[in-house]
Length: 510
Image (cartoon, rainbow, N blue to C red; front, side):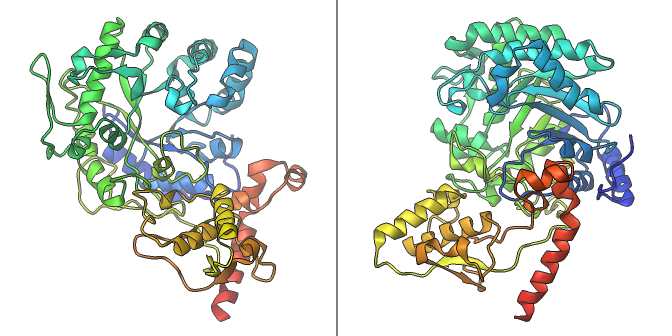
């Protein structure tokens, strides 16, 4: 199968990326991969993301929205890809025929040009009520079994393993916090035993999702216990001389003991999501994110394991490659700020993906990103009708992302009027900036105005969105005429970028 003509990754970059991968990793190494979600108002073109991964030597990616143009972007890239079903379609796939169609469309169709690693059933932890509005998606186990059988019937299918991401709230810990006393929650114990038995039979891994900052905060633990740099004064002593000085090893080994008690000791634990948010939560900022990764990644690369699984390499998927301002926020607004990168392909902090622990190593910046014109929508300051002001602020936040205004957020220090301006601008940018002549995206009931001076304030950044090729065309009619959907929007990206360049020139002249 030939690489598509709109593939933007240069041959030089491809070779360079592969060389970095070969230099930093060997087949025996634990991998450090990333999750890539695309629930954003503006998104990087998939081929740009592949280029970004290659330049950073990242060899594993877990994709949450695997549309055709996304999968095509990974053709013969050397990056191992994990795909999966989302939670909201789970019930539809308790059906062999339906699963067969999905396997054909997402895997078999690409198996000659892509190397698949895992298939995950559910993105947001189907057994965690916090993520499902109190509901538990028990069908996930049956669906996982059906998909694995379908794969095993195909050529090379047995190399792809099916699993279900599980959040740490599946684990019941006693007040002592000792991992050896942990077990699966009582309400799901029977189903979890069935599930891990399936994993054992198919030699599939147990996917564990954990967010250290959220866990220590919710359980009133020492904040430093979330990190692996041995600054915490809180420790847990357990049997077999196990000593826990950080939440990661504690929860990893708690999961280990759950597997032991379910007669699945040999099942491998893979960390399906771990990271540090940079906004909208106490302690969520770039400084702490950098601190977390500075000790965590060398720990993973060392292969030293945990007290109960020493000298066993741990595979991890870091969460997330970039921010997602459209993702639902079941457990907190910080879920929209997991990104190692900003939405525009700019790294937020230093991070050494190789795990060598080098300081001040910043990931490469996304190539080919074009910003929209430097203009912002702000509040006029007219408070003659406070009710109307609040109504328009709420409307703007309801249709965009104002999570940075939450307590602990980077914009929480703003005055009320400044918060209204922030809300107006987020709406304005999310809607792709209407032309100043039309001005409808910044009218806000007569309370908004377009300005050319950046209104950012301290830690609070008033962003200017990027030109998103995937959002450049709206509506199905145009897409259908050219083959449909996201592929069309990538094909017109070069024209869009050119047009935006002229617009920027115009604004500079004006």
